[in-house]
Length: 425
Image (cartoon, rainbow, N blue to C red; front, side):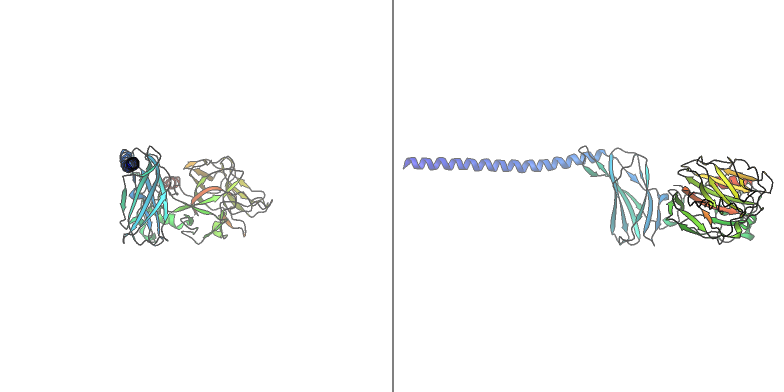
């Protein structure tokens, strides 16, 4: 009996020891889990504290259209350490509702990116605040929210904010004849002819057509509205307001019903436009009112470029064809301001200006210049009927196309170039 009691006691002691060991192990596991979580949080805080990545929203960049639910703004990364993973823009309305928009992209120090946010379907009301916060990677490659949040308060005038106009040199005096005002004067209207003797009345009354391509192809001063063809798209300005037209070089162009306003005959005229070519291939039409190559005296005319970027003006009429040769050259992947003007009917009365520099005159200026009978007036290509060519499309961006029924002065052409009213892309 004594041996059995001893055996039971020994077994009980073993069980007790095992239970104690299990309890100790459980306590160790719980303590380690607590310490691990605490150390991880502390490490994360240390990581985030050494990141000084910060983003800002320049006020002058904000464009807000409450009616359409559209917001355009710039996000700028300031100086500061940190490997940026993404950033989140949070829109908050006057009722406190918040909607985040995440962008999985990194910005270098002092780099700026433009974002266009369509929040029309988000259910937000009038906006009150816009905030942006960066997300950065820690040393373990984990993503952490940055500590620096930038908050932009909506003032309500964002739709009317625009960057300052280009400075006007002191020698330029802009005057407007009040008898010709139409109630819509702006800097472009009153200062288009700085330094010249041309009155505002003369400038305004000689304006035939003006297409600024700000979300439409309407003629801003005449009745020659355009229609977009081939799926042409708008290029949103990264600086300033408005837009320009981007042509794909395949089938994009603007068609305008033929008008006798473009039949200059032997009268003076001026054509002005901004072009940003992204490629040159053969002949690329910019403005055309002709069936080039039809070999009949339709007196149609075309402005186009060669594969070298050279600008040509061609008038198609058997026996009196005019073609410029090397009178100005456009630069690829850059904005070029081009002006073609005629004053008089002499052999050297045509001039082609590129960025306000006169490239010279063609060999023969004594021809009629009219659009081809029944032919559309076209921006972005020209049509060669003789060989049934549908190509010759422009590849790039075109903006601010203007036509006058007189020859602009050298000072006016320089003023147009210095105005720089094209869309910055």
